[in-house]
Image (tube, rainbow, N blue to C red):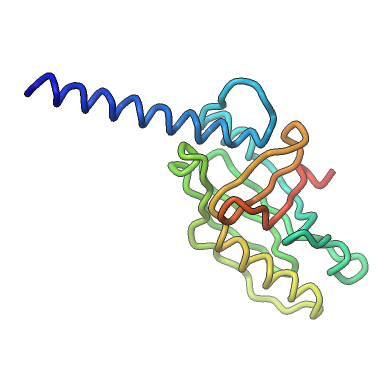
Length: 162
């Protein structure tokens, strides 16, 4: 009986290790190469990302002339801050979920200023989609980031806005 229990424990360890590796490989978004660790994923996410598209629609075409697009700044400590179109936002993301190839934002706090109607609409859509994000993928050598819901890209961002 002890050997059966031991085999089950070891099988569980192997399955958990495979799930972590597979999940982190999924973070590569077609990058190729060997699987990335959770630390690699955190390092790749770290920094500023500027929103380019929501549900396939270019953000620039939704904003008033000269308006700044929404952006997110991921910290290596699980904190996130940014600009949502009119207001500043801050909160956190679950570092533990990165090991599973997932991304989940905690409660995001925001300032409550008003702005141009078009920018307010972009902000509302952006924050609503952020609440639904459950994963992410990198593209273009890690310069583009797709935040996903159910495997479908809903927010497309570019590293540093370039």
